[in-house]
Image (cartoon, rainbow, N blue to C red; front, side, top):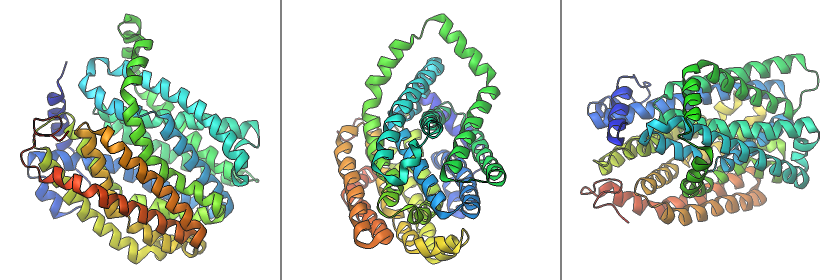
Amino acid sequence: MSSPEDHTAKLEKSSAARPSLPLVGPLLERVRSTEMGAAIVANASSLASATAVTSLLGVVYWFVAARRFTPSAVGLASAAIAAMTLVSTLASLGLGTFVLGEVPRHPNRARPLIVTALLCAGAAGVALGLGYAVIAGSVSHELHPLISSPLNATLFVGGTALVTMGLVLDQALIGQLRGMLQLYRNILFGVAKLAILVLVSTGIAHRSGMTIYASWILGALVSMVALGVYSPAWIRGLRKDISSGEFPLTKLVRELGRSVIGHQALNAALKVPLLMLPVIVVALLGARANAGFYIAWLVANFAFVLPGALSTVLYAVSTGSKADFAARLRLTLSLAFGLTIVAMLILLVGANFILSIFGPSYAAIATVSLQLLALSGLPTVVKGHYVSVMRIQGRIGRALPVVTFGAVLEVGFAAAGARIDGLTGLTAGWLIALTLQAIVMTPGVARAALDRGSAGPNGANAAT
């Protein structure tokens, strides 16, 4: 059995051997000259590569949808997908974060842990997906198509369960140092849903928002099935683990229940406001406004993919090693801020041109919103690193009230802004709420980064 330190060494060695994307130029080359810098940058580049490739395919996907479907259909589909992602985040129950940390610590029982987490996630996805479809379809006329037929309802509920399992599976693959499989699965997902979208938009006369949604779900199904076919040895090992009786399902379920509550609460507080924004837009401003906002949101997320990956890597690298945590934090902060400033400038100057690629109506609807989303980059860096610091230091309980109150602010300010000034007001309200959170979180991040005597997570000098 390998120790957490062995896992970290393996992570650094294997990732350092892989070239990173040439996105950062001389700065990253200088950082990579140290062993610690090489591990962080290579892992961030690996995670960002997966997200960047899938995001790029997502941009192409929505470009095709915008060209072949009406803005109302795109708005409904984006709201349905955002709702599904929101429910999937809640249904994942913190299991993705759990397997990301536990699989490296207990490699001898990785397969049973992963499968148990997937089963729990799928069951929760079905239950919450069904509940959301009924409630949302009854409350909002715009979302009524989710339950307008048994096929649509089944598609939404089944898709929610499938995407929930995919979220957990991706984290498990990273925890097993099989990030390339995670990359391949997501590439296949992106290509498959795009190909299906092109086929259905060409061959089906009645093209609705649910048609777009169906292509998304079928693409996810193709990627999951392909991964299972590609990993027969892993499946044989799982059968051996089950037949041995060493890892009973009920015991693992109880263990998961005790371990994931804190992570799930924090994950929900982080992701729910972001996933609710498109739903708020379509409910208060209509599907057409949401079409423009969703494309702007997609572009902004793509621009900030590498800075976001750095805070995730800080957590992944530091859970297995207690040394030099403050130095790692300073490194990821400096890189994230530098990259974010570059991305912000590009979006501020090029917002209208970027959105016009999707169509003139998208630029007319959401140019100002994209510029406001660009300004969210810096506070997002602070928030992401604050959460990573709290996780690493074992202070989830202290972080949870802060992040939860911030989530309430984001939703409340966004809804109030929408009523005051439409889409621009919604984006501005969300940005103000995010900035207020960053102001509150900055002292905690700064203390951790400047604590040169800290031994890292759970070290002798770690904050309690």
